[in-house]
Length: 396
Image (cartoon, rainbow, N blue to C red; front, side, top):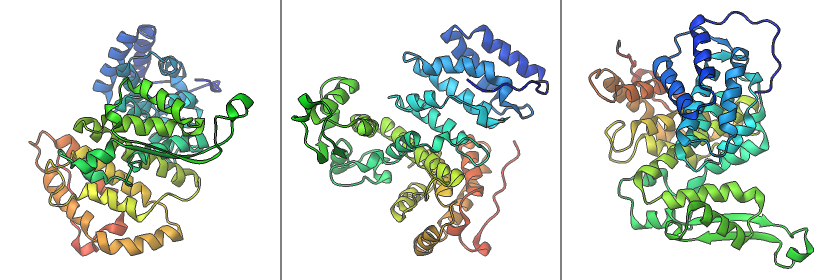
């Protein structure tokens, strides 16, 4: 982590000094480093220490950078490194000295959904108003976040409903659309005269069906589509995102993972705009309806098992972030949409109160996270004050 080092820093807690020594001892051994970080996360996940200075962790971040920079780092190691990075950023001041954005940008292209989610969680911390670094709002990151926040919008017959994608048994039509890829881009003439004759300048559309049945590995399919359709470099990430989604779409568990990615990317993108005023927050009525559909699926209730509760928590956080911007356009949109969603969040809060008071439930941790997100939910969509109910978290 290249950064300016202060001449003097306040002393670090002795327990944290020991944590740093543990990481340093196993820094060159990937398997042991993975085990060490996982143990620290398991024991100290709540971070029972005072908030420190990120400069204290410069040497540790250098170790983590080595893992992120390698193209052959194990997925499991990448995930724990990113989780530990997030933990440090959440509990340290001087986040602006963090300088590993190029590594995050590269790892964001990873094919493993859990790795991508871990990167998004790190970016979510870096994009909050408390951070002063604006690198996350630069065009390369915005382009990737935009692609990830709309990966279900590339079906042949138009956007797919997120709630339909979350169904355990989606219809044949949903499967057909989900395994199709539609990519639109603008192709320019190649600067090489020998290749220019093979190209046609102008708008182009790639439409592929049954992508999950294409022979070869994901990388081979991706390379073949890039070559056969002469996709420009600026559209590579969007194409890769849509292809890997379409190839995993028939598998329910993997499909739900990519729904989580889309919702989380939506949250990070909105945080970027809200934190640094990088243009208007991309709020639209269809997006609000999609998120509300995840929170209140037709014919079911929150936490009843029809949708994973952690996914509903992500949807609630995305909704809260999207509605944090208060421009005139957003205010007009909310006025027109409020009637359709009026009182839904108040109803969810009453259900959340019942759930978190069930201390014997094996889902208590997820229910507490949902209850916490409810407390931060947008007041513009709640019922009037007299209809609200107080959410009391149980004593643990």
